[in-house]
Amino acid sequence: MMMTIPANSRVLVVLPHPDDECYSLSGTLAKHIAGGGQVTYACLTLGEMGRNMGTPPFTNRVDLPRIRKGELEKSVAAIGIQDLRMMGFHDKTIEFEDRVVLDGAIHDLLTELKPSAVFTFYPGYSVHPDHDATGAAVVRAMGRLPESERPPLYTIAFSHNCTDEIGFPDTENDVGDFLQNKLDSIHAHRSQFPSPGELGKSKKMDRELRERFSRERFWTFRDFPRS
Amino acid sequence: MAMQLIDPAIIQQRIQDLQDQDLYIHLEMTTGAYASHMDSTKHPAATFISNALIRYTTGSISEKAPHFRVGLKTEHGWVYSEGLTHYEESDRERLILAGHDTQGKLVVAFQLSKEPF
Image (cartoon, rainbow over all chains, first blue to last red; front, side, top):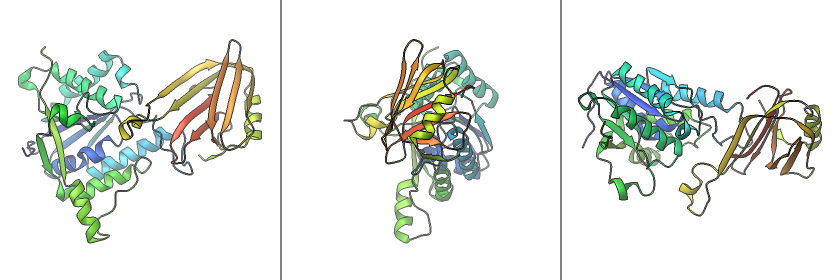
């Protein structure tokens, strides 16, 4: 099914780390914004426990949050996101965070913004403990909303077993017109990823990038706990 | 900020300068959250303690490059770390040591400061 988000509406993205947005949904967000929509990106941590320091190292454990904050802001600008919220949680601790605080922060965003769609990770199928815990928190917070007020929740999953257990993504978005935004978002996270390539260098590379990045796929999450 | 390869003589001096006072320690070791996702034979392990208060009476760094060890003797026990390769040259107040693998990924962090990190 092709993704349909109401034009001019606001969507909410909740992810734990700077860079979680770029490969997964930067094209979808850029497309929504180009159509007149608004995006709020709640990034729970600054990825301050990341491991990539460069060879030779260009940063260290103490300075890394500053570097990654700058990368996040650059990525957000590349996508065109209007509202970035850095939520101030600590990398690697989301699963241990006080649930009243964590769920409350997400619930506050939902009631403040009344988004037309929400994006996060699929809990249990997203490899990094912070990804799973973030998805679980969003599910709990959305579960508190009356069903009639609950927007669609689009989720990302990439564990090896995910398609065996939850099937294939049910929603697809053609973001072929927004590849440059997507590549700029990826390149913004210079400390985290090698470049996947650039458009306009060769026809072969253009074709490969187009094949790799033109479609973003999501699982629509429906299994909310009954309140 | 400039992480440099460890010079044990410099680090030994800094360890001595910080001896016998209350300090905050950040001690960490990690194989990365994606270790077993990338290669199922790898064991994912990570541990850190952040801003624990310690005080040591004796401390030293091993001498042989490129992988250094540090040991601090505290009132009731020890702090130990192995695999350190780099230090932050520009930070004169704090001792910031790290061990990076050949890909530039942090494996060990060992940090001391008079103020919380």
